[in-house]
View 1 (cartoon, rainbow, N blue to C red):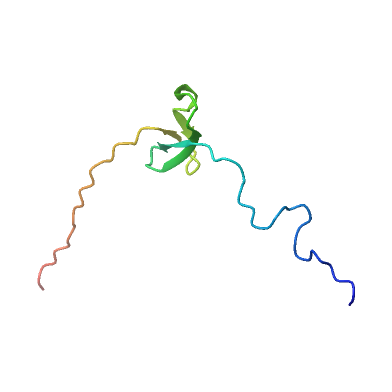
View 2: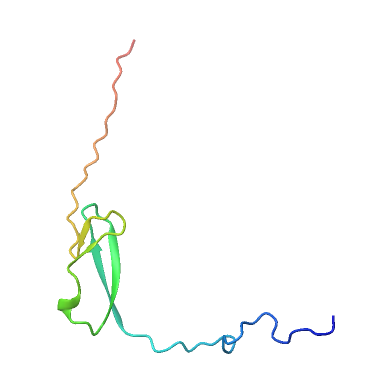
Length: 89
């Protein structure tokens, strides 16, 4: 085959291979939200967003329940061991 393609394997218009500059990365903050079951969801917002524009409550993607920015208080789980006593026969 005598007419091979010189740009074989490259997409036309894709730019130089290994291009590193995709623009400046904006500063951001992370806010954690918890639903009633204790699932945590993290949302990222631009650092220059006003506090009143950050939602206090979102819908949890895990359960669909409302999730707030305050962590729920955990119940103290005391594990009680139940042992079955058998009488000697």
